[in-house]
Amino acid sequence: MGGNLIRFDWAMKRLLRDKSNYVVLEGFLSTLLREDLRICRFLESEANQEDATDKFNRADILVEDTNGKLLIIEVQNNRELDYFHRMLYGVSKTISEYINLGDDYDKVRKVYSINIVYFDLGQGKDYVYHGKTEFRGIHDKDDILMLSARQREIFVGKDAGDVFPEYYVLKVNDFDKVAKTPLDEWIKFLKTGEIDSTATAKGLPEARERLRVDSLPDKEKRAYYRDMEALRYQRSVIKTGWYEGREEGLKEGRAEGRAEGRAEGRAEGHAEGLMEGKMENAKEIAKKMKAMGIPAEVIAQCTNLDESEIDVL
Image (tube, rainbow, N blue to C red; front, side, top):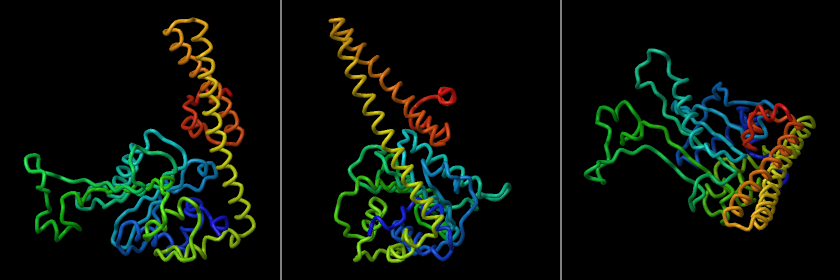
């Protein structure tokens, strides 16, 4: 059954924006945030991209719920060392975009940044993380700054930190358990594209019916298979290239080190060989990605080459 369901990030671009399919995304958000959410509308943002070249890197959407909260949902396939910074930038930009010039600060919207990542991000043992601002006393660590009674009447929440953005990181590749909770059922679907017949998490029964590949029109179905094949090929090229570069670099480094016969020579030869091997393989990867029509900025992120180097390949 899993092979017949559309990947969640592709569905975000094409299907989940349809009002008739809101129930799927609402189910995911309600399960994650542990409250009953209803989508009011999708908001215009440069993050809401359907451009074909964007399929290689990420998919993200911005929605507003019926209570006025803003929710950024982003799927990231490729490794980014500065991804945490991008999360911060995305939230900051969203806040500034959705407050009018001259409005009082109480018009600042509550924002949730929900990040579904398919690579190792940071270090940790869990597969779902939640981050929020908390104000604790310096002298009394148990003293958390609260909103005043008047502020609670105006703003949602009781802690001062409840006004600030919240972040969720779902490291779906790290999920290796039997799905026992509604959130686990969703994580399994995000990782494998499979929904068990017994899964009852909110939104998943609807996803099982509405995200079927065989329900797509022929043109959309061909586009879906083409995009998935391109994504698989890109991952394979990058993984193979870096592995080969590492092996060649190690081999050359050892050979040069032995020839020089000194510890210093071995270290330098190893480092230089490793670097040269990685560089040559990075260029080969870049050539293949460029031939596939992938934008130079995406190739630069994947290979660590400068865009100027990519342009001349």
